[in-house]
Image 1: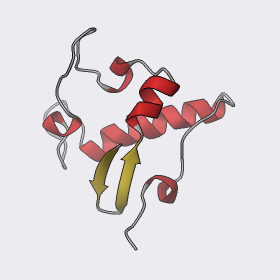
Image 2: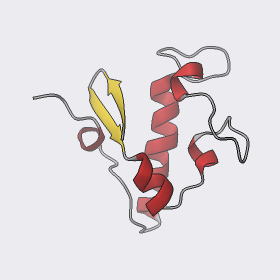
Image 3: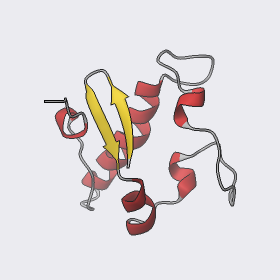
Length: 93
């Protein structure tokens, strides 16, 4: 699991489920990697708290990529992950 520590609650990404179970191509999320590359840059290396140059902010990039994918699956009546704010962002108790 990968945890993004967002100001309005932590977001947990189940990497194994996305990659192995759902068979989502790595390049769908890791858009700067080259096919067959074992590892590449992490999101936060390009996507900072604020937009820098052509790179959108981390919040904008992750909402577009992650939530956008979930929204597309929901519209297509396919199984999907959460699409609501509090479903993804979990505040510590």
